[in-house]
Image (tube, rainbow, N blue to C red):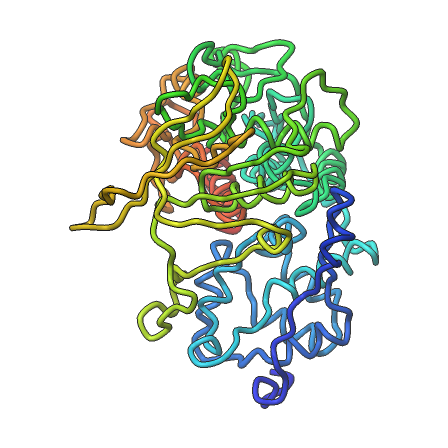
Length: 491
C-alpha cells in the first residue's frame, strides 16, 4: 500500500466535462480525464482494506487495490497489465460502466468512494498512448474452430480469449460494422467508435476473423421485432454453423425493445430509442440516410428513465430540440441512499447524468395513457400520475394531463434477445425469453443443444457492458474446456 493515510489527506476528484454549450455542438466525447498527478492522488485514497469489497462489486473482478497502488507509484505499465488481466476492454468500461465497484468501496461507508472508474480510464488511455496494448497471438494452434454469433462486448471478449487459447475464431455480425450495441446503442459522445476499431484491429492481428452483414437464422418480419436493426446482405443457417465449427457461442445483444401498446401507438412520430440512436451513430460514421429520425426544433418526450433514455436526451439536445422531457414510471428515488442499508450493494437513488445536465425536464410516477395526433402524425400524449399501493402502481384519479409532443422515444428497456436466433438452433429459453444456460464452473454456459453455448445478453438478458465482458470471458473458458478437456483461461 503506497499511501497509508491517503484516504484522510485527499478528497475525491471527479472527471470534468466540457461546457454544455461547447459539447452540444458535436457528437464527440467531452469528458476531461484526470491527468497523471490527479490520478495518482486519487489512487492514494485506496485504503487497501483487508477485504476489498470493490473486487466483488466489479462483475469482472478487477484487482482494484493492486492497480491503484501501482498508479500511486507511477508504475503505469504494470497497472495496465493488472487491469487487462481481468478486463479485455477497459476503455469501454472506463467510459460507460456505472461503476458498481465504487458503491462497494469500503471508504464509501462514510465518505466519498475511491474514484476507481476515473483511475481505470487514466490507465487504459495511457496504455494506448504508450503502445503497451499489443496483439497477443497464440503460440500454437489447436486445430479447433469456434463460431461466435454477435460482435458486442460479450462476443468480442469471448473471441479474444478463445483466439489466445489457440482456436480459430470467426465472429458473425448481422450489421455492417462490428460492435453490436456498443456500436449502435451507445452514442458517440459517450464512446467514440475509434475505441472499437482499435480493438477489432487487435483481435484481427490475433487471428480472429469477422464476417459482417451475415444473419444467422431469420429475423422477424412483423411486430416490434421488425424494428431491430438488420443490415445483413446474406444469411447462414444454424445447421451450417454447427456442421462447420467445433463449437458455437451465441453472444447477441438483448435487442427486443419493450413496447408501449396504448391508443395512438401507430402515429408517425412514436419510435423506439433503438430506431433513433443507431441512426445518429451511422451518420457520425459517414453513412447517408434517406429519412433520419431527427429532433430539430421538436418537443421531445422520452419515456423511460434509464441510461437509454438519458442517451436519447443527449442526442435530442445535440439535434437542437425545442424541449426535452423524460418520463419515468416509478416514483422519484431518494437523492441520497441509506448506506447502512445498501452498502456494499448497488443502491437505488436519484442519478443525474451528463445528458440531464444539458437541459431536460424530468417527471416521475408518470404513466402514458395514449398518444394523440392529427392526420396520422403525433401531436401529443395523455398521462396520469401513479403511486405505489400494496406493491402495485395505481393511477391517481384526477391527475390526467395533456402534453405537447412532436417526437416520442420509447426507452423502457429490452425484453430479450432475438428469439429467431435461439429458435434457429433449437435452444431452450427461460421464462424471460433468454437462452437457458447456467454459469457453474462445470458445464457452464452450455445450452441444451450439443456444442452450442450462450453468454452475455443472450443468456442473462439486458445488462451492463461489464457483465457482458465477464460472461464472454467465462464462456470462452467453458468452450475451451469443452474442446480441449481442460482450460488455462481465467474464469
